[in-house]
Image 1 (cartoon, rainbow, N blue to C red):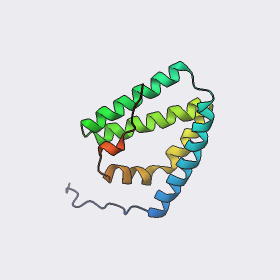
Image 2 (image 1 turned 60 degrees about the vertical axis):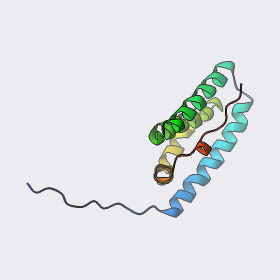
Image 3 (image 1 turned 90 degrees about the vertical axis):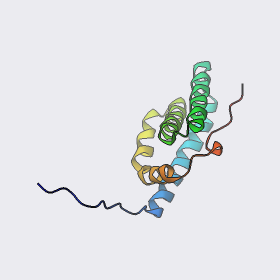
Length: 116
């Protein structure tokens, strides 16, 4: 057996990044509007908890943890809107966008402020 030599990394497809961002924005903006009219106290607690955990991930410079928590938060909002299965469409198109997210520096601006 011979060891594999070299790694080939596919370039980021900017068109796919833009398409993924467009789809996420369309789905998530509509979901936020619908969810706002349906929010229950348990939902508000869960969102606050996810935001706090995101802030902690930023403080630890835990980019992978932050991205996972951010996705969970957005998935929860889509579910609150009554469309939990729609998140699958987001997952299908976000691979290139996630590559950009992983390569982007994690800063305090990455987290959303928490009130209350």
